[in-house]
Length: 241
Image (tube, rainbow, N blue to C red; front, side, top):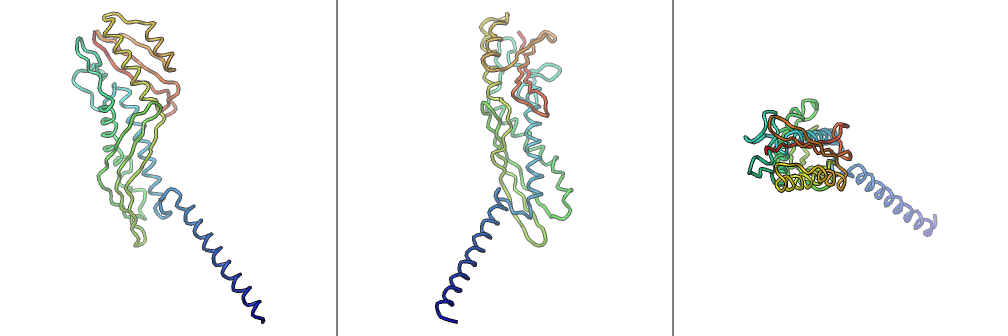
């Protein structure tokens, strides 16, 4: 065999090895596109589903109470927080509502995962859950620090963060409208400006309704663009005038 032919074969061999390396590189990156090893992806997806489920539950629950997981003392007997109680402005800050959502997430994800009993082939250790919640106009964002040590077939994988968990509920818009309602009630008390409520609703694509309950007014702010469990999201709060 001539030297030129040998050189060609060497070049072809190098190209083939390089091609195999490139394909292997892309296969690894594609299989780990989320940054999670394939061995633990079932556990990761299960935990992620629990986080998303707990986030939706948290948002739904604070909508039912006026922004709280544990309602304050000044609430109706059916657990609706007062935002205006005679002369007192009791509306929670948006930071307080974020803390309530985080607290719910920290407590409930453990119950959802059930200590991972559905994964007998893995040995899983869990650390303390710490959640940061951000309420934006069009969504609620959760960043969950959930340390997991996952062992399978003598290999141990560590995972800590679940980032950018987004629930598409317009809680920021609803909070802003609740502020407008409260400001208007203070200005016009004891009357309610129905045309003002209609304006607030129309400008923000919401529905606002109210009804009397044991000497209080209960407000319902509903958003047809936000759904949890296929139901329109509604936020309730009470005022005692």
